[in-house]
Length: 186
Image 1 (cartoon, rainbow, N blue to C red):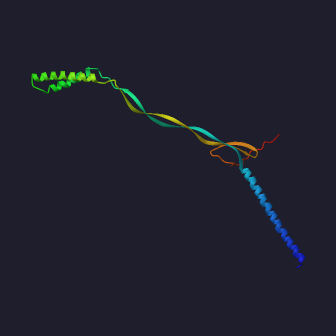
Image 2: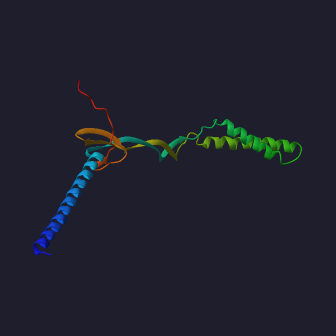
Image 3: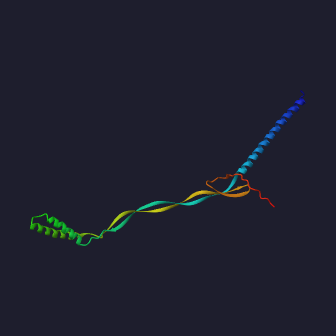
């Protein structure tokens, strides 16, 4: 074969291979541009995220020890002790002796018991103030802040939108393509 022909064929092959490489590169760049356009349609840029905060009240029981002063009960003066003493003394006196001696011992026991009861009543400290400790409880409410969502402002195709989400989406959010009627100018 002729060297010129060979040279021409070789140059043609180089040009064909080079053209294919350029075409593949152009196709790759075109596919990358199409992918970026699809992603631009599918994602929106987040401009602002504001947490939505709600106050939550949680009840709890709070107890404390308190010193309380109480007055002891008053007794009925000298009468109660005298009567009880007379009855007890009479019963004991009735256990001693026989006949008239038993009667005399019963009367003497009642008199002696009444006198002892009367003296005990005089020494009683009714109305005395005593201190004791009591536990007093009450219900208090602890109030705390809780994040219940996020108001997210984003832009898509030149328009600004706001939505509420249950999480912070970050720099971008995925959006769905929607079909809306075209507003015709008449």
